[in-house]
Length: 473
Image (cartoon, rainbow, N blue to C red):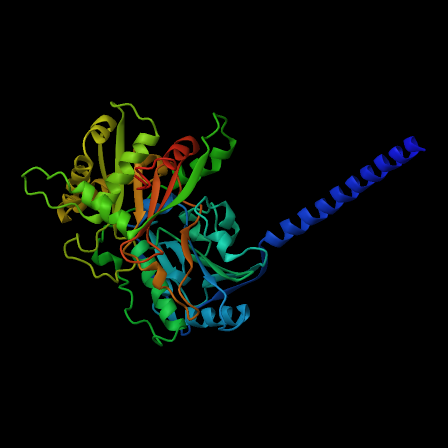
């Protein structure tokens, strides 16, 4: 009898286990379904008035970025009492129609003239800006505010892995509006051959002002004549870009090292301390100025990334910053200049010199590179590129590089469409490589700065444990 009861107990237990496994599988399926992003609609938005045929030549500042990917930004907002998701979508579309009356180039396509020179074409019969609507009611805003990676929000931003060159047949701007469990996510993909960060956030703030009722039209219209900054007509051979991206998938070689992305948040107090350290050693008496917040934070990142990479003293390391040239060119261009008016500034030193000397050494290297990049240097760089045009690729960033894009000066947390400021602002998975850094205004306000870094996984593991880098010492 005992044996029968024992066997029966085992049988019941196994049966229960089977049921539990089946239930777990169902629950896992439900959970996966709940966190999935489901596209519910797609439409296009045009300017609210007829614009006519417009053509704008791309210039030397724009063309090198054709082999970069669409520039992706993600803003997420908490749910409020200002209407349902569908109401918000309609409000955003209405505001978009108004803002595109001035920023109409974003509703166009890339094109070529008779001499094969690239330009932005706009016509009233073009589709306009793509707007995708989606639902992900299993995802909360808090899940998107974590500091690790971009995989959690990859499906919330359109045009993953899409080259800027594809703007010849794709929209120059695609926006995905996703309904979350407790909020809304706005994923934007901008064609980086058409505009830089300054123009991106000029557009975003103008759009937000119209939606939140601050203004009924664009307060500061974009300055659309790129040829005022540079008017050299450059014909590009695009075949290397097409063949390179077409063949990579079939090439056999060693697997690429695993990359990781992480967001590091530096408080106002930490930023001030970093700046104070950089300026604690007086610079040489050669007229050098005190180091700025950017120069101080830049050398802090450069030094600790180099340390995490275990570079040898004789290894060279390159620092690159994509600098705004609106006030550097001659004549200067207005802040409202629409397009790319940035240039990569490169400088390098041996890892031993960078790490063995105080922070002021590297800060001075960066400062000199930035300050020497004046109108003459910009003009010389442009002439050299125009004589032998080359489409930039990530490998051109330099050996053991730290490359800084975006800027904490962009008021990303002021982009309020009428339902509050964003809870978070992040970059997407495009245009990330070993050493790429994005700087943002800190969520905590003041002089705080958020730093997004992409590195090889092994080096990232060391960096995130580096208490000096984290300013925990």
